[in-house]
Length: 342
Ligand code: ADE
Ligand code: ZN
Image (cartoon, rainbow, N blue to C red):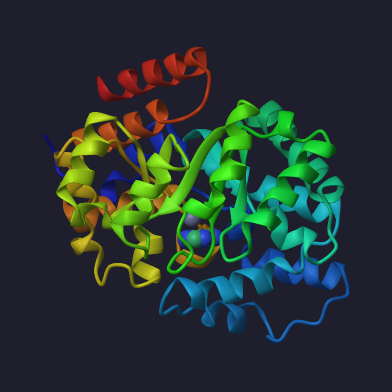
């Protein structure tokens, strides 16, 4: 077994993989943010791209969310959402991503008067174009903002349904400020999503306690946990995640930038992998946290001295944990086996 180093960047990119935890609004690079502000006649409180980028110093999740919601305000037209999506999908394709299941936050847009009929056509057209151009397979997960009420989440679900958009999403999720906003109040809207045949996922155990992970599993009935870093504090929970093969969509660079961990070398993804959990590596908000999925693999491999076998296992986990069809998964897994066999 060889040890990973920065020389393994090409190997990492050659691994067919899925990205299962990425907020499309979090892929808004400062350059595109400035271009869209200019296109839409919006004045920004930063002189230039460098000044904006240097503001990306976060103490915790909330300090990031404040800038993330502010940044999303430049997204106004269908073309803006399409440009955002195209930029991300092309970048992901370059990292060997075959399948992406990405989050979007409708309430961030509807609450400022930008409706489903603006962002959904923009997203969907760009996704179809990218699939045709590069072969990348893409699905959308509608996230409810947990700092807002369960009634607001329900109204958002109603709006998606009324617009005929439930057929165009694969699932629902729960994001935004975690601590103080447990999953249980969102049970009803998650039940409706289940009745509509949608998958369910939730951010849990990023900053919040293991109890929120239990709540996401037992009350929201999710198929995956987003982050789950704090699961390790509860051995019974770890056992449950292993037995039920519940994937964790982990985001090492995000955890580092939001001070969930002090050092990448302290990240528990390697330990959880060794315990047999279905852990995966993802980028979360790549424009804000210093790297897309490839960099997340590379820097984690360096910090934790992951082997090539570990990296193949992480890519395998991502493909197996995806909500793609069995046929698609079988194709990508066969490609992965071929890379693994050298
Ligand atoms: N929204 C965007 N990124 C997020 C994260 N890391 N945690 C919770 N909500 C988010
Ligand atoms: Zn996230």
